[in-house]
Length: 302
Image: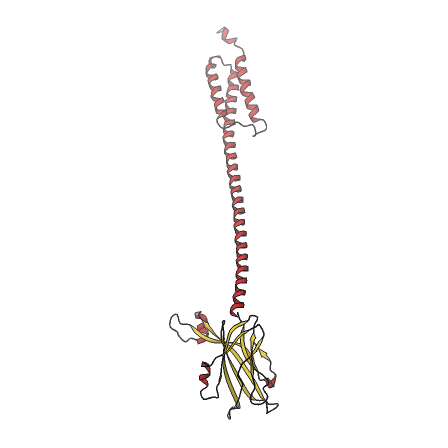
């Protein structure tokens, strides 16, 4: 018992091991958390410390035992922090990876969007050129009309004008004098004009206006069909004696073109509630050009 009472307060060999473990703890905790070990390292060292403690259990001093407990607690703390730090690093790496993927996706999406926009621009430009070429070939929105010339006396010629920016090709006229008893036969006697350039005119070969004033209305009328590759327009020309000079003739005309309505709402507007069979389409005439009486100088209205 006397020898046991003289046991030193601290064992030198135990102190050496504790210095080693304490040194690891200092290294790991220095500049926190950059020096933290990988998960599992600290618990492995803790296991080694537990073996040493078990081997030296019969030679422990009280002070050494307290220090071993403190070291074990510190190693457990380091291990838990290492696990948490590893998870935080992994989560950050995943977040960065997602950000990089999203950035790459946005760049790819922007590239695709820019490519689509460029393709749309090229397509629109190509279609614009194509439409322009087609308009030049077919006549686009151009239309023709007939204008009497030198309407002094009772017979005078007429010319056909192209009212548009595109040339009219294959232009053909049929002119019916509605005062004639067989005026309908005129629609089977076409007059071939050919091609008329934009805002140009051509004479009507072999044709003269010969108006005759109606005894009741004092007017006369010609009905003209003007056909080209872009469709057919109809023109009504009215004549009466010039109010400023009764020896001459004044004229007025209107030019219309047939329009096909396919949308139901437009059909309802045109028919004002009248019912139509399903799928029926409505044909109407749209005014292209109107000219008032020449002796009144009313001018053109479009």
